[in-house]
Length: 354
Image (cartoon, rainbow, N blue to C red; front, side):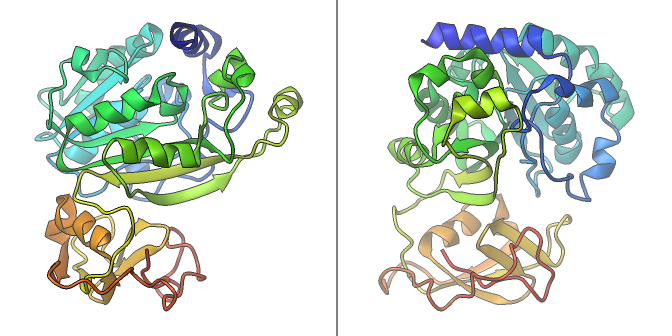
């Protein structure tokens, strides 16, 4: 099934799709506009590259200046060219894709973008390879600060290897930050083999609980949902094939730090210092942690490590240690019924909980 799937994906994205207008569903299209700080960066990306973009979210990391970032399934390079501007000339971006037609476009416009950004030397390299085998792409252990992916992991026939490779190459404290399509149940094999369902990012969608198990087996027992939206299938033929399967576009982050499989309470308190340029007043870690600048937030041990053992350490003051355990972290006293942190105003931001 592996070779069948890879060949089907190559054909769909290399030959069938010419632009995003050729997609039959909205699964591989972002529902929301990019954040305000991304819009001027997007204006610097060539129109042809933007027309061939098939992502489902905006997994663009903040506080990334000087970082090495890997874009899995980079396609024609839209996100890679955005990342190039975000990491700056001292940072590095690696784009990996298996489709010649996509990489040809990315490389064709590489010099154009470097000139547009005012860089004397490229800070991007595009590599042909498979996201299941990053070693063959020359990416070493513990060498990457951030891995992103935009609606690509669902296309892989060997997701276990994908996650294993991601956490092999991430540095300690590194982050996986990706958008993808998930399902509320396991996809029947007949739909996994359907070329259109697969190409439209539906046939390979992971059942969310199987994703949790895969990540735990990789050594990452806690991950965070940043955003989630339900998908509607407007194509009658695809909707009939999918039947009662519910699909979701989700953006997720996971860190290579010390974690427990439950949120435990050690009495930690976190203060956001407002020092991330893109978020001076409030930093959203996930869909239930929105840190307003200067205010104290009780956090579980896992969240404390996500802030203190990563690139966010310079932007937070985390008080407390792991010397005393107070039991499971209690979310019941936190107001998690308010506005979503991603869209909340300062007065609507909900309290922190795990």
